[in-house]
Image 1 (cartoon, rainbow, N blue to C red):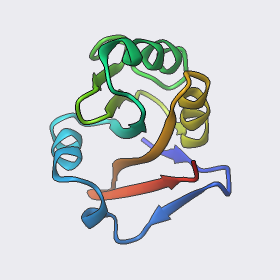
Image 2: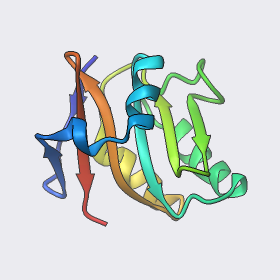
Image 3: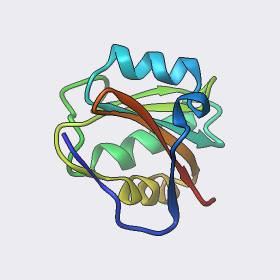
Length: 121
């Protein structure tokens, strides 16, 4: 699995293990081929529906997992996205924005290392 970075509005955190919460790291380890998003403003299950609708339409999302490829936790403002192919993180950011929310950061595992991508919101 690989990821595509195409926009200068995102930055990779080189000291990312300390910057991804233990809960995010646990979600990643328990769910291979996923990415965990921290979405600002995602505070209720109704909010989450719009995010799911937008993200599940994206190429590269494994809709056979979770609920259309998306698991939502409005309490923590986390969105767990199941991946099947290459994914462009900037397009994930655009999808979250189109749903009316802001992507703060995301975490994923790359070659056994937890990495964090920060978004300018």
